[in-house]
Length: 226
Ligand SMILES: *Cc1c(COP(=O)(O)O)cnc(C)c1O
Image 1 (tube, rainbow, N blue to C red):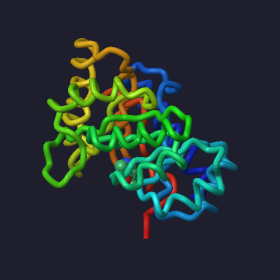
Image 2 (tube, helix red, strand yellow):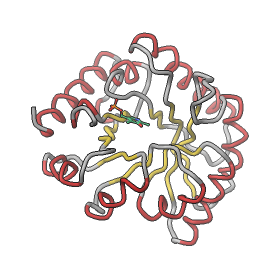
Image 3 (cartoon, helix red, strand yellow):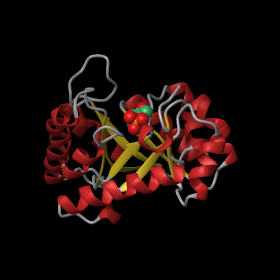
């Protein structure tokens, strides 16, 4: 199967999952994850009409973000503070804000670049020690800090749940949505939490059923990573 056929198949599966959940498929953004693949593969997806991509290693991403600057680039990996400047220069969205320190640095760099950066707060819903992301009860204080930062615009929450079978991950997706709903109720001023980034190749349909508005899909589009 070609990238273009795979993209179409994934789009159809997204639409079916949305319909099952009584949701509008247009409310779901597909981030095509191109990590480890060359720029030529990104070009193939662009030729098939796709323009939103995700990368999780800054160094590996630069050749692609430079060659295909008109696409929308989401950073989805763990971001070190010393890479914040490069991330701001090359990415439109950083989905993995997991500390005030990182948020401050991104805000400073975005300000210097005279730009507003869209961000997601990454939440460790599984409470796993080795996973990045803030604990659920630390999300609200972090959002309050970010709300004061003039060059960051919060879009929502993101999570990488434990690596489990799709049905076993469902409770984690549900937890992220419930956390978002609870935070929306408390109304952190100036913060928009309409987006939920959750779901990958193995479980994006379950994520959509649980409210995902952004799914991050690599393998199902580009094949297995070497
Ligand atoms: C690699 C990656 C994905 C895509 O995973 P697939 O299983 O290949 O779809 C999604 N999100 C993050 C954060 C990733 O690192």
